[in-house]
Length: 550
Ligand SMILES: *[C@@H]1O[C@H](CO)[C@@H](O)[C@H](O)[C@H]1NC(C)=O
Ligand SMILES: *[C@@H]1O[C@H](CO)[C@@H](O)[C@H](O)[C@H]1NC(C)=O
Ligand SMILES: *[C@@H]1O[C@H](CO)[C@@H](O)[C@H](O)[C@H]1NC(C)=O
Ligand SMILES: *[C@@H]1O[C@H](CO)[C@@H](O)[C@H](O)[C@H]1NC(C)=O
Ligand SMILES: *[C@@H]1O[C@H](CO)[C@@H](O)[C@H](O)[C@H]1NC(C)=O
Ligand SMILES: *[C@@H]1O[C@H](CO)[C@@H](O)[C@H](O)[C@H]1NC(C)=O
Ligand SMILES: *[C@@H]1O[C@H](CO)[C@@H](O)[C@H](O)[C@H]1NC(C)=O
Ligand SMILES: *[C@@H]1O[C@H](CO)[C@@H](O)[C@H](O)[C@H]1NC(C)=O
Ligand SMILES: *[C@@H]1O[C@H](CO)[C@@H](O)[C@H](O)[C@H]1NC(C)=O
Ligand SMILES: *[C@@H]1O[C@H](CO)[C@@H](O)[C@H](O)[C@H]1NC(C)=O
Ligand SMILES: *[C@@H]1O[C@H](CO)[C@@H](O)[C@H](O)[C@H]1NC(C)=O
Ligand SMILES: *[C@@H]1O[C@H](CO)[C@@H](O)[C@H](O)[C@H]1NC(C)=O
Image (cartoon, rainbow, N blue to C red; front, side, top):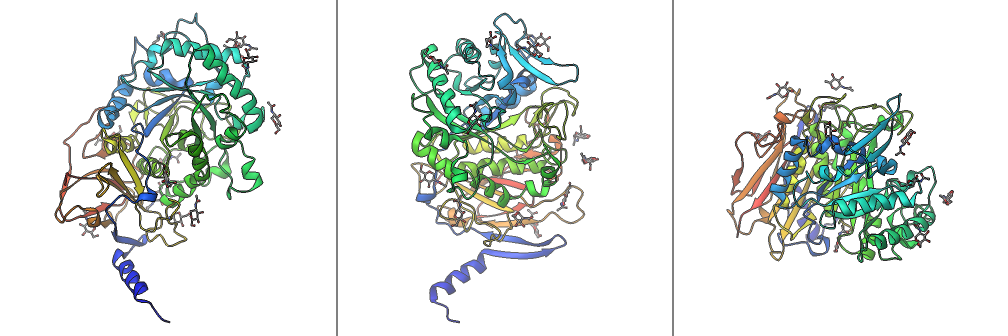
């Protein structure tokens, strides 16, 4: 066999980049050297990140459980939202929607803010909002923008219009960011396709705009949830009802569409077949979550080419549909998953992701695992419920991480810089030789116009480490010196961690050394100063590196 000088050189680099150790748990990576270059990787980079990248979706029927009302505000929720605002410099957006939005009506004469009609079997049948509801919404931090989902499934245009008029009068254009008409219309019993959805959605959006005297696009189309078929360029995949096919069917013919939303739930406990794969080891795997989000890449391209660079959002998502799973979606593993999902989505040009907070709905599926209370994937329980007391879950820390990463900037651009990244932006897969088997991910952030060196790096080690383990916690030494402006440049590191992937308590989950179990930061802030360009990233932890001025 003959080797060219170049391939010998590349082989030498590859050998230097990865070192392995053998542990009880198998062979894993013990070091990783990032090769750079330090400058912004042009063709791979996103436009400036939307500062509300890490946003929320709150199930309409549960909105008051989260925020309370003007007389009884939920101070825990308000404080947890405020922490994010303080760090990101802007408020996360809040979508009021979900399945119950399609059975929610407006009643101008209702005294209470929100009324849920629950039948004798305990099933939530419908929801009614009254004028006080807007005061609950206004408990969110100042500057919070709302996406309001209107009912489409009942095919009652008058009802949808009355809700839109009430929201517009109650909140106004400074608070309302978008209207959606319908939640997950690709799942309706009406059996919509893109054509007959658009035949109703498009004129409804035009009519509502006219009735409210809105002369600019104010609507978010889609809110569909069925996973894209792969490969994407087949007649079956092209016939799927999603934002791209709705736009092709003329959804924006009246120039009412500003953005598109699609929903993602990689795992589910709606039925036993899917429940079998909704496990913690599957959840905390970068390869798996990246391959899943990659299914949307063709749609992201199609939508952005039509509506612009800031137009594709994941308007509702979480890890395990039908309300999550104990010991999976309520663990620190969910924090690692939420962080990597948010950062990877941003790297493939998703503008914002809205983590869904709600509760099990009685009639979602005949075979679902969960019944009653609040969902096991929520970031916190604002009220005591069947599934536990008031508490914050470890996953909240992921949104603190993202908020500090944004850190008040409106000009951060990101690129996935994990070695072996492919030209289309996808992560290299385990099958194609990812040396970490989906356990490491690395993202760079450049604060334009400073495109020569990154301002920040996000390094995640998703390797599982249970709090019950009897062996020392492994770590990977990541050498990021190729990204420094000069040798010895000071890097500041803040860490998101917990005693293990399996941890369910926020009082031992830390972000920069502090816990947030009571809604406010407790403990001393911890950050590390590094001048070596190298850091040990422990199994099941994530590090935000800030490269100080150069
Ligand atoms: C506010 O919340 C309290 C406690 O849940 C409830 O009793 C009251 O009816 C609510 N007020 C309104 C206007 O909904
Ligand atoms: C809610 O459902 C109940 C039971 O079907 C029904 O009586 C009531 O009229 C519904 N409320 C609204 C506002 O549609
Ligand atoms: C449609 O909604 C309006 C306003 O909420 C309501 O008065 C009307 O009864 C609804 N129509 C039907 C057929 O449910
Ligand atoms: C929409 O079209 C599909 C055929 O593609 C049909 O099965 C369905 O009944 C139609 N739905 C409505 C509400 O018109
Ligand atoms: C929209 O308004 C037009 C004109 O008022 C009306 O004919 C049509 O039925 C409305 N369509 C929808 C879907 O609301
Ligand atoms: C990205 O490129 C790789 C390698 O060519 C390919 O295997 C993968 O399917 C592509 N992914 C997307 C989402 O296009
Ligand atoms: C979750 O883990 C705890 C502790 O290991 C265990 O007691 C509990 O049964 C588990 N829950 C489920 C639903 O398996
Ligand atoms: C993201 O969008 C920018 C242009 O807006 C493009 O250059 C880049 O390739 C896109 N990234 C991916 C992964 O599609
Ligand atoms: C992560 O998932 C990929 C794809 O399913 C698999 O090949 C890999 O072994 C998984 N990694 C771990 C650590 O289990
Ligand atoms: C950690 O515990 C989970 C169950 O909670 C188990 O599925 C997993 O295999 C364990 N992982 C390790 C690395 O011990
Ligand atoms: C990382 O692991 C190595 C060897 O396993 C150990 O010597 C080192 O102290 C660990 N680093 C940290 C920060 O714990
Ligand atoms: C954390 O909370 C749990 C459950 O409420 C409690 O049992 C535990 O003692 C607390 N741990 C710390 C360190 O406060």
